[in-house]
Image (cartoon, rainbow, N blue to C red; front, side, top):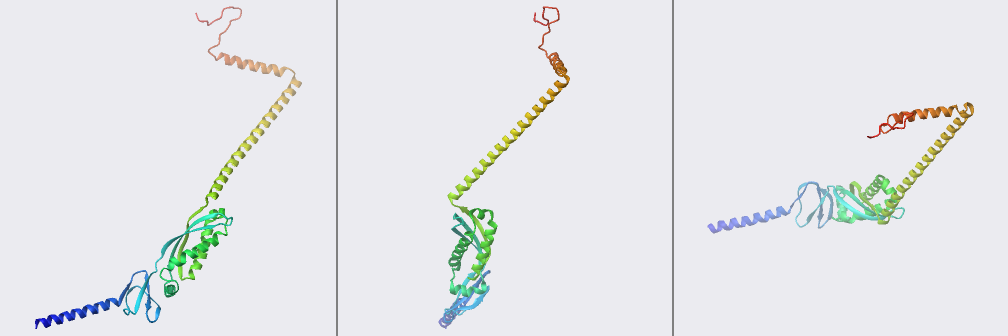
Length: 272
């Protein structure tokens, strides 16, 4: 009797385990920010896109393919040429995500690794096309315009593959060694030219100052000559008296002056 009971329990447990396995295989989860596409062995990829949560499927017949629909970053480095044939190294940072409603078409025509197949090729194509419109100098001075043009063209191109670009930015922009050396040489030449121009302007100012000074001396000499011609030697005698008065004043303030009294042959203030 006990053996029959245990046998019944064993059969029930086995049936329960099989049922649990079947139920578990018929359930699948779609995490937050993800979507699922169902592949049916008899009908192919279904057009319906499954949202977040737990869902049922037919075991063995149906298979869920989970896609991440959140924005993800990707850096794409590209080496291209500018309008003036300068080598340019550019790195483009892209935030992308798929259009949820187009996931069945993306999976059917491109595959699960759609970002690896699409983004590098279209990014290289757009960058080469846009950079070729600008000179090397314009790529530096008009970087915002270049970035906006790349973003507009790349967003339009990616939309044809069912991709949304939330952000496109130029994170790295450098030129070849020859162009960098040429820019540095140009900057040095400009500095030398500025220095030379300053020296020339300084010499011009000194020349003008010398001319003005000479003209002043000439005018002063002309005025003195006119005065002498008008008043005779009186002006010279007046200047002599003024000079003598100034010399006497300076000598009287000096401590190292000795005086020789009139009519005496002995010097005063000589050391004993």
